[in-house]
Image (cartoon, rainbow, N blue to C red; front, side):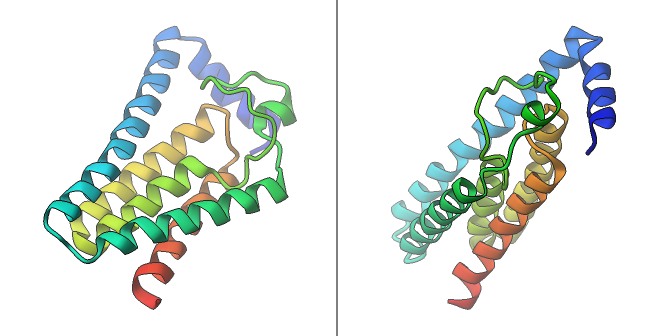
Length: 164
């Protein structure tokens, strides 16, 4: 996304305060829902004595740690740093934009759930795509950041659950 495109998108959202509020609210709701769902999913696995529980904890933890290290090494700037336009979503972090950890986490959780319940995992992937779009429109990530985050989550899940 270039500066002009980003400016057009953010200007459209900013010209109506209600749009800003909706974008921020949906971002919070999706993020909160998905991140509350994961511990609930783990609790269900635990209560059912499902042997998948250990992998459902270890695979996301290892992938999250690896992604965090990779992100620090890349230390890519965020759109608001690159273009000097304040983000719509409240964020003041410098660098570490690539890949998106929010989007990675959603797709990693989706892959974890998908291993046990395919339909629920697919629904979470759709929510992950929506969150990715919101993170770009909100000005805290470039499209490449969210695409890479989703791919890291999907590939990490495939390797962790279906290859190993």
